[in-house]
Length: 190
Image (cartoon, rainbow, N blue to C red):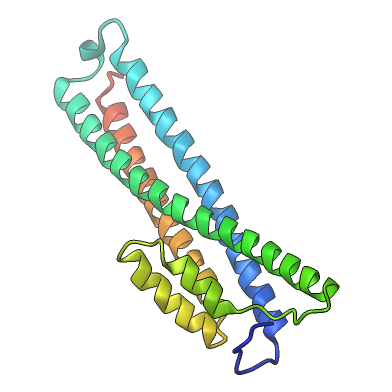
């Protein structure tokens, strides 16, 4: 499938595995991001409802509101990091899907024209790395080297790892929100 693949055996299998990993990471990332958004909105709404009640300080002390607000800000920070990772994972997964489609189209067109259907991967990857700032260009070059050596799944595996790190940040968000909710509920009069 590529010009300089040292091991032409199982190329399709490695490409299929990379596609599955990339697609799975993208779907997991989107689900985590949606859940984190709903969690943030729900907790923010609950705190806003509590604070906008007629006499919020008769329900909970200023200290409790302050502690809950600090926890809410910590959760917002975890959510911002999670959302940044979601953007990277979703972009990588969507880009991989588009790349696969373009390669298939290239091969089909070249065959129809009676030309060699092989793709010059070095030309493609060098153009893809050019617009990236450091450290993105440095990271991308590492994956380009791996892809040129026949490791087609390196980028997909990295994307899946980022999706799992994103999941850790969602778990942090959940724990912090639960801590804030427990703090507020314990302070409510019984």
